Image (tube, rainbow, N blue to C red):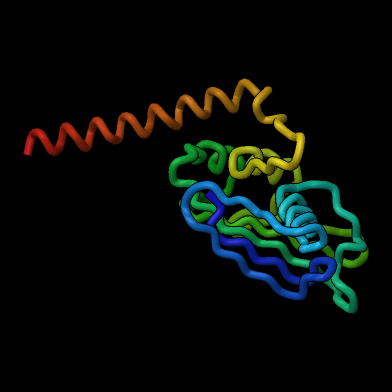
Length: 165
């Protein structure tokens, strides 16, 4: 779950920090309020193709960073397979330079964009108007079933512990 998003020197944003609560987060607003700029920054964080023009005026580097709580995502094998340090509060950061070069980090370890894209598919799904691509992925349904089975198992174990005591 996305807990915090920080953006620095991205287009018109000098510095922005947003903390998210548990559950569904919806970004709304009138035309021109900056929703698309915010979503563009999130997409950059997730490994989308960059445009060096996004670096704010008179700045050399744009930084987009997010903290995700991944305790329920079953990603320890992903981290081990990619030689990354696992933490339940995982930090993903992307730095974009004015010359068009970029760097990506997971828990302060440099990663290739391909790895960033792969982990991002587990962490966040952005739905814009007329977009529902995730519903066509089999892996989405398998992960959804696993998630609900995990919740049921935890409830059962808590009930069992309560009844035994």
